[in-house]
Image 1 (cartoon, helix red, strand yellow):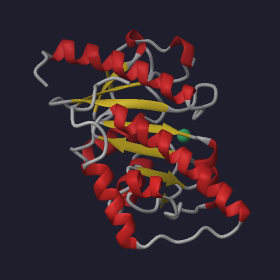
Image 2 (tube, rainbow, N blue to C red):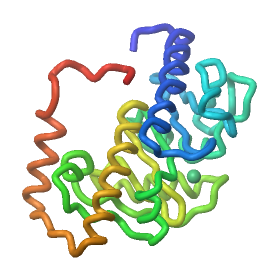
Image 3 (tube, rainbow, N blue to C red):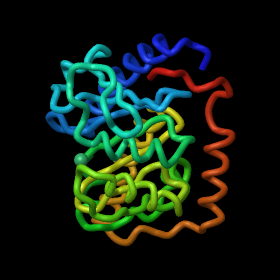
Length: 230
Ligand SMILES: [Zn+2]
């Protein structure tokens, strides 16, 4: 990014504040739960939601800038209580530019059972390249959630992980991609739940999952670069 640092952070504050509206639009969050963050490219910083602020009141000014140890460096409010997990992911995975966390209902129901979502749908093959994996149980506060996310995602193509007894964490090249993964994770979790409720979903051949993933990731959509905002 060519913008000077102050301008870059201002744009990311706007982008992250606006992306939170997608979590409510798609019904992924209740009350003040859920959060979006973005890495500040080229700096050891991230922009994240403040803790306990109503979604209607989220604005560029009240986003919190933290370093990648989760320590606030800009902003008057305390950052999200999930900041340590986001910071751990940015430290461990340099290619990740955005992180999202929700307790979206259907996906979190799979997490409550400690069950990964097997790939029975072309839409899941497209976006997740296979199963959406289940990560370990971890208490909030230290690095345990972040470690669980990174360790679990390492063996999968999925940008989403279901943390056991907790909820969904997603990653992306930027915050918008991580929000998309959170939306698609809930969509897939819902359909997979309905399919299972009605019977036994049919398996897909691994080669077909690979072919769908490759096509969607490399050839699908418009050829212009992805816009920075929704
Ligand atoms: Zn949570």
